[in-house]
Length: 458
Length: 95
Image 1 (cartoon, rainbow over the protein chains, first blue to last red):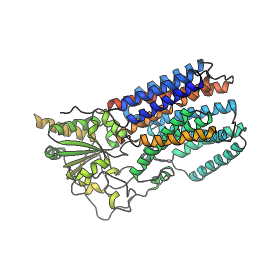
Image 2: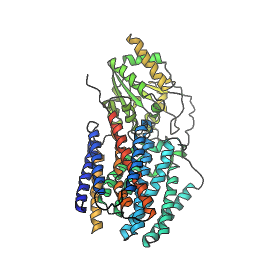
Image 3: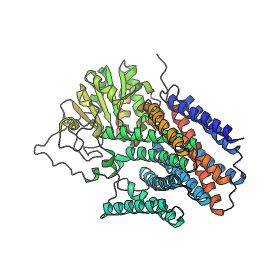
């Protein structure tokens, strides 16, 4: 196959990838999109194999067998709660593959011109730090490394030293691209830097980290495309880069923070708010009394947080919602953008429990309707329903968009204890007149409510 | 000339990316990200050339084969897991 034909097929692949993303615009067409995208990938790989550039196939066969086998294994094995760590792992693998491709091009051809040297430098720096950064993120998300921010004395100094060394060596390398030693040192330092980039970032910020790493993995593919003069890599790298940037922005807005603030961490240093002089008291309610309220409710909004997934209560909450609907009640789920461990995570967890996706509402869609809601049930969520973010300028979460459960006629909060959320902030919602706490394990409470409904139905 | 032509592609692709992705609802952001991982595995085509081109050095064979393995992990893992997630998004039958 000549190069023109290969390029033509690359164009078709790009179009298929673009349609794949376009069809992800709706859950109805999304699967078709995924198929189209996979078809595009198949075409691109087939065209490359037939291009005549490839002489020996044995190593390729070995590589594909190992990679595809492991990929399939992990994809079928991973639980939906483990999706963020799986995605982090994929970011890391993609970035490392790009580094290796750039490296091998450099090993064979050297850096032929200025553009080549610059893009090669960018590839190994971003690729190297994305690789280790993603591995650390994977470790944190899977609990292999403590999820809390890891801070130590001189951290900033070390980071600044690493960044400036990488920059200075970069200038030297670009001026003398034949220096293989510089190439290896830069790669080593970047790999090292990735570790320190992610370890100081805490659990609550993981959705942003994942999104940022996603955009990096796209950018690396893009710069590697420049290194080996491959247009398809540039197109796809840009699509993925744009994806990561958009998701990072959405996540940051949802937490009312800037990307710089997340990466250079301030949340870890939040001072716990001093206890107020007056001792406020939260009102609690028994499951039986909560049932009586729910039985008469015409509309219920359920606000799930990651605590719901931790308690493995997704199926219990679906059962409750079914009983409520049987009772003639309208049930919606209000999903805060940072409700899970990564963008859109909570939606997947609820979809897995067979909750219809038209019941899953975005924060902006549900908030205007909140005043007409009889009961809001908060399960395993805390900071995302704290009304202090609307008026308390001293609160660390001031300005963060929240789901206005306090506007509902009654709010039930399912919670183990009065402990604070991720941000370590007192939640004033718990002390409101129309709020009732239902203490205990979320799953057991939900099952008890379902049992009440079953009893009443007899 | 070559560089300008590549930059031209880059610029338009970035615009295309922003236009397409800003339309994906938050409902599907997790599958969107795994889909992005899968297509990012397109680095596989670079890896194929690195592993299969007339390379006589041990280093390029190691680098190329590892890159092929890593990229196909992304492609296969990414598409399969996206499919698995998307299959779960169901709408209740209208009563």
